[in-house]
Length: 64
Image 1: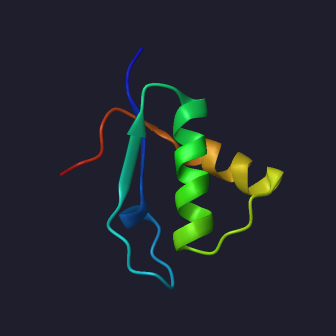
Image 2 (image 1 turned 60 degrees about the horizontal axis):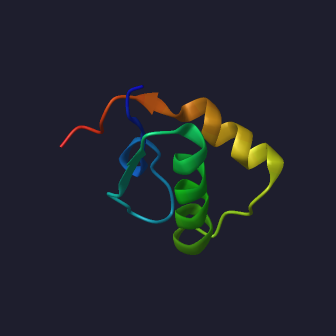
């Protein structure tokens, strides 16, 4: 089982963010991303947003 990650630098928006999150499981990563997205970026925690995040999760570790 490899690491999963998502990197805010891949998604430019209103908040300049250089955070990258990684975890061993998709579910663990999804919860961390949702917490970050709602508190820092002001996103709403919806089923549609969660699915969009799931679709963007990558295998491996974020680049330095």
